[in-house]
Image (tube, rainbow, N blue to C red; front, side):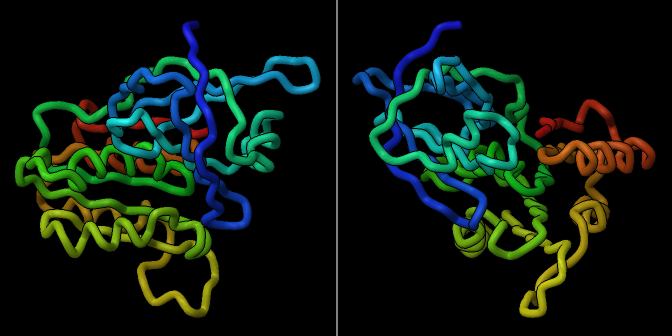
Length: 239
């Protein structure tokens, strides 16, 4: 596997157990990828090489910078535990971006369904479609259903809320599954809001799903049981 050196540029903690890590290439070469792809980070810890795959959370950047949104300790890997304590300046080996979880063409009406850090590839896709000056969304309707246990686990929430005010074709539906007295928005798991998001556009909509296996399998089962076109269901499992 071909790798290159990357360097931690910034570290942010959107919640107690999550990290947003910004990287830049250690060389001057561009870092090219397609929204939805992932990279493999690797380093040596206690004399042993460890690695882990992570989806890219940002759109392509002219300087090669990219971001990851991860729950380091929860991923159960030695590398994850190391990333929980990471500081700017540390370097890693990084694979070339890979994976087949990408936007399909031609673009149709789209519903993104995410839970937890499953939001990561969708942030990259939405930045590609909506955050730039180009009309990449082609006027299609886009809905993001994003589920979390607590409001502080709705990563990039303010960014999505801002996009919703700027792009009339984009709907952001955050939903909280845990008890939280101050939350006045949608409640329950993402599955409970799927039918409303699809409305009467089932024959012209693509659904993208990313998150824990149980959520993903349930959403897929609900869609196929209702006769939804399996070719229009795109997913990435987070173990």
